[in-house]
Length: 447
Ligand code: ATP
Image (tube, rainbow, N blue to C red):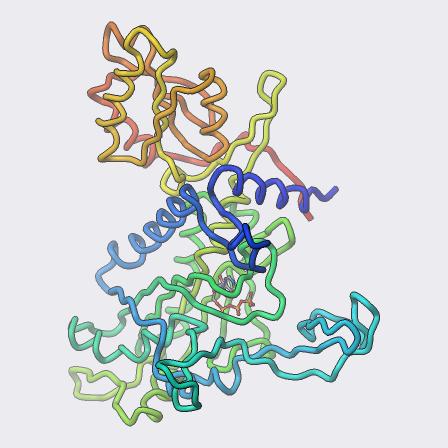
């Protein structure tokens, strides 16, 4: 039995209710496929990007970061092949004027009204606008459809300023824009989204080995952050679905409630981009080896979407279980991703407990994202924290007032341990680093 649509609905509603994700421009009826990250959503998104940056930049000697401009010279997109080939086939309905991706419809009749469809046309997915006060052809600029090109055009700048030696990589996180014909599935496919991309430059001939290594490395990152392995798979692209620049590509797919879909693509882009930019700009974009040989490196590109990853982590973490006759909704997020790390609660609003709890909040605040709550029964406060995935709850009770110990409640097991306030920061740090996804998680059949 499929519970997929129900699950997505519940998640979308939880995200709205708890300040994770809102519909964009909602008071005006909303703007299709655009979403705003609320106070808890932005915390989670920052944690996700931080976990990626930490893994692929800070922990490695061979990768450095970059933050390139969204607007780039329009020649960039001619050289990259996007002006010519970054398009999807589309058809229009002559009767209701709806537009579809040609590969989403069967036959020559509109799937909505049954009207006649036009012939297939190519629709370029890049957003176009004008730079400066004059709207003329020479002022056309594009919103970047991928962050990668900002890296390629800076290849020499980065290599020389940082004296990088092959193999090395450049990593970037940033917004990308695609005028998708059929966006949808919440934040899975939108027209404005964020990418996390690495261009890893290697000596030609070693590219296939590096491609394999990156596929493993990236898959492991999702597993280490808690995604269930049985909902992840690798899917190599067939010949006819390869992008114009790629020699081969493998997607990491996740089993979303709406089916298997791409989380991240890891492509072997060969030397296509550096060669094309060299040709179009007239500049040498190559690498001078000590053996005094000039080579144009090949590139392996692990390219993931921040929003898609966030959706996968949310979907994967969402769980419902029965506790003492009540349904407990819990997001079993990795503590590193959870928007709030520690909830701090006085058991009751008297006997000095709120004051003590506020002191503890101040002790914890420089180290963790903390949330203080004294409203309602302690049970309800725990439930509110479970629902947004807060992994630890610190409670001040009457014993605290005597011996300076608090209880620390674990979100997943709901067990509590007594810890001295002096040891609290260290204790929580240890819990975060030893966190494992609980085994008893509810099993569901989705599709
Ligand atoms: P799809 O086949 O789903 O359109 P793609 O193969 O065109 O994706 P890539 O060009 O490989 O995607 O982009 C790299 C990553 O950027 C994707 O794996 C995805 O996580 C993210 N991404 C691409 N398009 C979108 C979008 N419209 N909305 C959200 N994320 C996106």
